[in-house]
Amino acid sequence: MSLLAIMTPRTRLVTTTGEANLASLRAVFSQARFQHVPVVDSMDRVVGIVSVKDYFKELSPMMEAASEQAIGLMMRSRKVSQVMSAPVFTVAPDTSVRQAASMLVERNISCLLVTDAQQRLLGLVSWKDLMKAALLAKPKPAQPPV
Image (cartoon, rainbow, N blue to C red; front, side, top):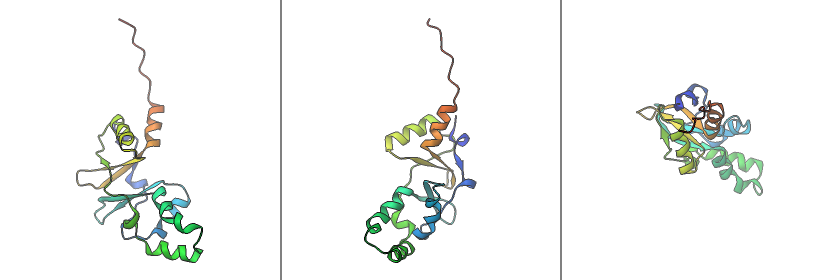
C-alpha cells in the first residue's frame, strides 16, 4: 500500500507561509484539529513545518512571567520561519507504508510531508495514519508448515 491511499490530502490541510506570524497559528492549534502545519512558499513548495510542540516551546518561557498583552505582541512579531523545522523530511506519493513507518522511527519524527518532484505539497502522513493503516490491513492467512 502506498502513502497516497492513507495520507491527508493537500486539500484538507491547513498551511502557512514563513512570513506569517505565530498568532495566525493560534486557532489551528487551540482547536487541536491539526498537530502539524506545513510551511509553503508562493509556489506551494514545502519549506518547513511547524508542530504544536514547536509552537508551545516558543511560548512556554513567557507563559508564567509575561502578561497576556506581552504574549500577544510576541506572537504577532515572531515569524513562522523563526520557529519552523527545516529542512523537512519529504517522501514521494508512491512510498510504501512500511518505508514511511521506518523513516518515522529512524528519524524520531511524527509525520512526513508527501511532495511531488518539484517539492510541491501533496499531503501529509502522520504516525496515526500509519497505525490506522496497520489496524485496517487484512492479515495474511497462515501458511501451513512444509
